[in-house]
Amino acid sequence: MWSGLYNCRPRLGRYLSGSSERVGKLLTMAPKKAKKKTTEAGSNVFSMFEQSQIQEFKEAFTIMDQNRDGFIDKGDLRDTYAALGRLNVGNDELDEMMKEAPGPINFTIFLAMFGEKLKGTDPEETILNAFKIFDPEGKGILKGDEIKYHLMSQADKFTEDEVNQMFTNFPLDVAGNLDYKNLCYIITHGEEKEPE
Image (cartoon, rainbow, N blue to C red; front, side, top):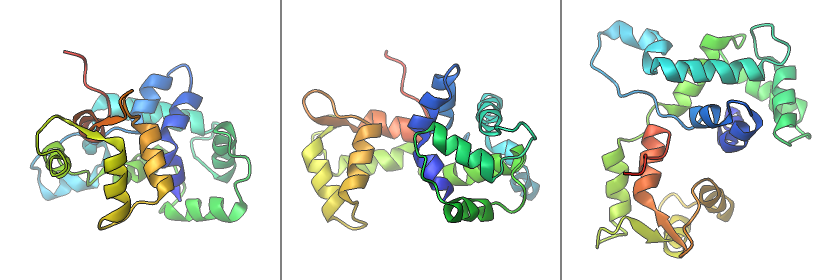
């Protein structure tokens, strides 16, 4: 259920104006590259992220914690959804979201929950290689219609809504092409490459 907020991250970023660019990027960030650590490393959620990422998560948490009590509760979730334009969130849905947390949602729990959503992202090279199957000439772009066809007809099929959501988050260029190299970079790094 938290995926509803996770999937709204571009809209949440716009809602969190003032620091909208930073917080919008926050919700698309990948965790920092895993380092070989001892077995105790997994117990510290803060070790998954760079300090700047943690600060941006803290800003988002603070904005979502509408009543400023240090915890995100059902009322805070309802207010956050309302600010995103979704006014008809039912109590059952909010209760399900609250049940996903192992306890009261303080900042550490919040960070761990979003960290779990981000953990497991494939390396950039793996994602690039998957797209390259459809780009034998290695141009770095795919025709939007073709990628839509493949996503909706192969293996774990996407719905039309899911494809449209992807194209909303990662728009096609004026020629109707998807820059999959940039898409892979954003998926794994959380922000667009700086122009060279």
